[in-house]
Length: 105
Image (cartoon, rainbow, N blue to C red; front, side, top):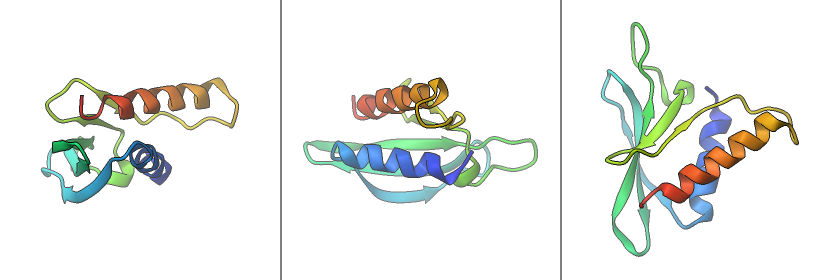
């Protein structure tokens, strides 16, 4: 959807101790890119895949429309941002916080 989704996701993950150890290319089909995450106390880390299935090609990560934690059912849809204080903005923040808390669980 937009770069701001990635920036806010990165900031939220880093805020609870995760770091992006590697950004890997996608699979040329459904996955735009993959973030390998590491966190102290989590030896296995976590993997987040960015969804980019399109009609003719896989979308670049900046145009992905969501992400999910590999091997889990946790996902995040990249909604419209909404204005500060709007219900849309509050919904995005709630869903982002919920997703970030679920990473590694």
